[in-house]
Image 1 (cartoon, rainbow, N blue to C red):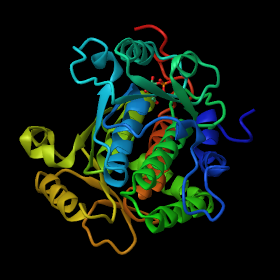
Image 2: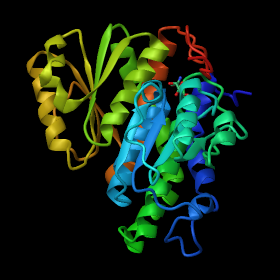
Image 3: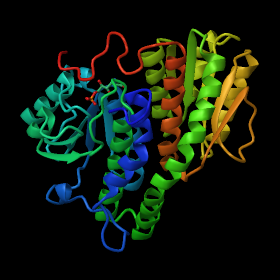
Length: 361
Ligand code: M6R
């Protein structure tokens, strides 16, 4: 069942290349320049989108927002479902759309948010993995992520599949509105098409590096994860994975927020995992890393070849343009948490106090 892997989580991390190729199947037009999402053809492009989700699915939403705003020019708000459901719904307008993201399709707070949106007469789109789940059934329209069953409590391939669908939605709405050129759409689809092979070829080395670095830091009690732009949601996800699996306290922060308080915590025993990918915000992240090191904090930098930076532990992964590099950074974060937890002897697939599907509030 585990296909020769020690845990379902490891198997599911290594399934991500397949998840991407499956997710792309049938989603491009004949000359591979534009996205096909027949599920959305009859719905207007939303004036505003409200993404509502929990946990890892919420992080996917935060990441997807940047692409939807950049390529499709749709203003997006991302909310935690348990907060959304108890707020006044002043922001919900009839021309808006609510996108609920849920791997299981059964998360109680996300389902409640869906019902509230529907009561307000707003179209609700579901992004789910489990076919026929409550959210999939109750949404006005549903997009399936087709990641296949995810057994490990920690969500891995589901996030990858959600990110892929959010990317496709941004490209689809962008070209439909005419704010994204067909050329740009084609270029990005080409990158996505090449991604399964690239990821497949990179995962073994990533796994080795995750093993090496996790051994060095497994005994610490605290970790910061820092990122900016599309790497900020990844920082949140990296921290969530580390705490949920290894029970090491970890906080994900927007790197620019450090000097507004959290940097006071930095000392030699409090390392930082910096997402320092080669993108427009890299210079800013590098200066945040220097600030951490000036307080004797150790830094692991997840970065790309050729990037000049100073870190106690450097971790190079292949580069991709812009936010699509997240598809390579995500498995590195997952593998680091996996290896840390396994090294510490934790129950990787069934972490304490957690359930795969949170069907109660
Ligand atoms: O099934 P859902 O996507 O609605 O689940 C949401 C969260 O419960 C889930 O992502 C949780 O945070 C994971 N255990 C994280 O690995």
